[in-house]
Amino acid sequence: MHQITFRVSLAESSYYFFQAENEPALRDRLSQDRFWRQHAPENILVEPVLGDRRGILGEVMNTMPESWRYNWCESGFCSCMGCSNISGSLRGLGFTKEDWLEWCAANPDPRPPVDHEAMEEALFRALSTKH
Image 1 (cartoon, rainbow, N blue to C red):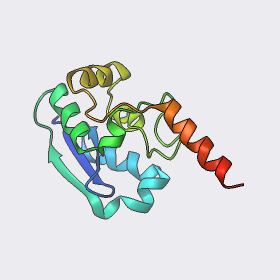
Image 2 (cartoon, helix red, strand yellow):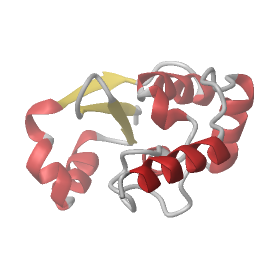
Image 3 (cartoon, rainbow, N blue to C red):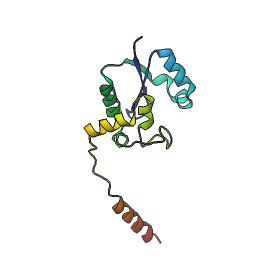
Image 4 (cartoon, rainbow, N blue to C red):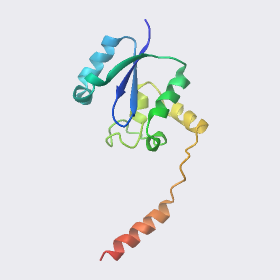
């Protein structure tokens, strides 16, 4: 058996990658899922999987929006609508949190760190001036 990847286009050039032993098994899995029944049929493309596990993880990570790449949610995909984390999509591909941490260590977040205290202070000031 050969391994294939289904690339499912969602929005704004973001992709989830699903791997399966064969096409019918994956199509059956997708057909059972409410979200994919609504969105997937015309967007499923089949591509051969090339490269090793790290290469596949790198490809998946590089197609995700930058704001998703460094957020892991223990609850998994769609616990918070899936819009701020990638844990569910990586778990669906068989990757673990350790795989993700290894990728993050090799690819540090280029965004500046968030100053939560300054954000809270600014929010407090904004709310107190409205009264």
